[in-house]
Length: 294
Image (cartoon, rainbow, N blue to C red; front, side, top):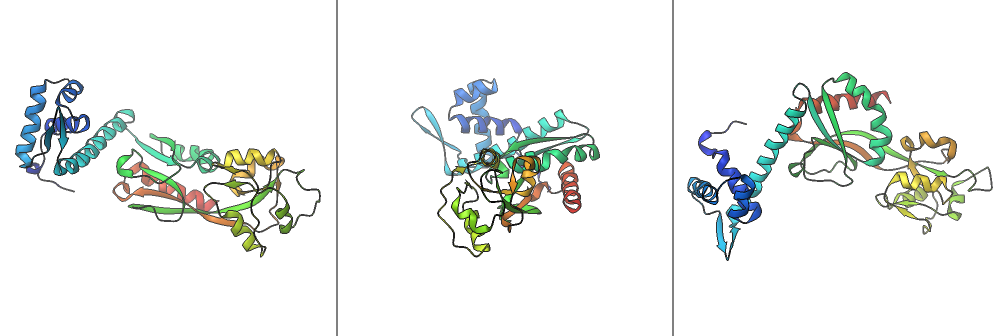
């Protein structure tokens, strides 16, 4: 997107304005910027003259943003943050690129991480930074280029690539049932463990088996990894994603003869403005090939 230089105020005016807007004080802003109070005041005044709008009003000893100033401050803070992040990325990897990816704990550690080395081999020079995020966020306020999202394809303001449906299969400790032949109805008599983010999984599972759902008496967990350890410890039956239980198969009774149930799907999501960012484009293509080969 092209812009006119006539509409672009000097960076010094903008940094002075952002600092005063954030701190509410010319004194504090001057201290942070290592400038005199007079210099900061002059830069803010020049910006107001340039815009032909008043950005601050004085209340006692503090400066308060006007409605126009508050809206402008939000946009300027976002822009300065993007410039700073781009500078950090360039300095850390000038010949490749940085991909900042938000991941879900279970999917990230059990499906993505074991495969990630093949992407890094195919994309030399790219650095991938992974951070956990459990809920959707505003890409404009974070440093992430993309995120792994679970649920529906409904992330606001983002493009997406569907990775896979989540298949949940019942698992238990080998000694939880007395009988070697286990039917769907047998699960009504044991504790059913639940995940906070999949509150209706058991109800859907019983519906799929044409059984009346029971009131779950089991524990509630916020992450699959903790719930899996509870299952291994004999605390009940849980619905677990197939990709998560492979490494623990020798410690589990996997009831894969019973129907699975899906609670949603996994997606790669990214802001449309980042769609052609080279590390993201190569990562997206790699993910597509991995999913196709799975």
